[in-house]
Length: 193
Image (cartoon, rainbow, N blue to C red; front, side, top):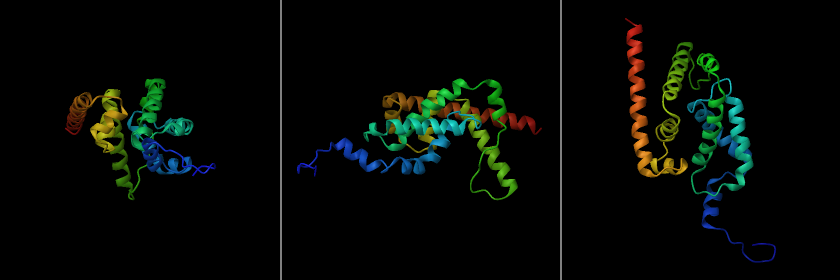
């Protein structure tokens, strides 16, 4: 009830948004920090700039939080911000910085032995390198669907694509990723000869 004693009208869209949006920004940040960090890296933000990029994402989210209507899930809404910030950081990165960043340390969680840490770090670096071989458009869709488990329909909505385009682009992204994996296997086979 409002102060005048009448019930306030809440649109179904606003009610959906309220149900999926955490009660405050701090909760949103805590619940989705890992999602934002991982996807910024997956979309090509270098380790040297990841902290700044994540901060930029959450700053933009904070400024636009009142605009969240619940038309999409909070994750796909956040992913939109991650895509924009990652694109800015990719454009600003020099090729020299990208080469230096390939060797930067990254956290690997849940691993306890030194050997496992090295293997985990190498696998993570390989994944980022292979994702980097995809075009930006294909990488964004591939990350959302294949790595985040978002449905193609929801990813299409988040990326402002029609469903047919999303399915076609995802098929191309999967093919490109598989080809990148095969090239990497061939390189590795050549090195171990």
